[in-house]
Amino acid sequence: PLTETVALPQRLPDVMPDLVLATSPQAFRHLTPVVAEALSAIPVRVTGKATAASAREAGFLDVKETGGDASRLMAALSPLITPGLRVLYLAGHVRRPEMEQHLAGKGANLSVVEVYDTISVSYSTDNIRTLTTDGELAAVLLTSVNCAVRLGELVVGMGSSQVIGNAVLICLSRRIAETAKTMFSNSILIASAPTEDALLDCLGAALSHA
Image 1 (cartoon, rainbow, N blue to C red):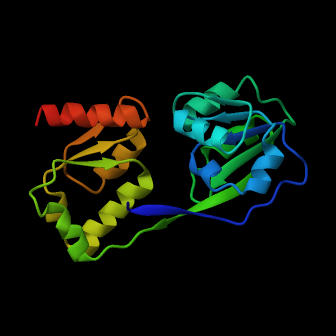
Image 2 (tube, helix red, strand yellow):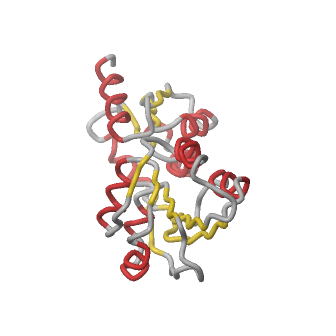
């Protein structure tokens, strides 16, 4: 792991929302039981199966997922968002602005609760080099832009590009791949969908042709 998530202090908005949104399972894994219970009966819309499962585990009763990333969630929300609709976005401190911009453009009455933060995990040069004790890496899975950036920092900071070697970089999304391309000359593959299953299918295909 190159990053980890930690819970942030949370409080409910002054006015209860009509709709709850989230784009990461961490939004529910780090949600306090008090906040989760207060919101549990409100409809929830999320990106994928993992986030939907986390919402249900946290006690939410009306959960629907759009089977993709934030862009698919925004497209699915468009018919639902009316001016003045009270929307609560359960988010990380580190996030992209598109969701909030989209909701503001639709005239939603938006509140954001920052549920968690993402921080870097540090490793020594020796720790990193043990990854190749048994031979060269075949592949590296990149599941977020943060992880891609952090990997680039490790390679530059430790002078340990030999650790990555010629490994193929398998990315969960095109945005992650675009970030990786700016830092690495390795071959890069993109999963067919932003899901763990698609990422592993991509890995299997890459290894079968290695």
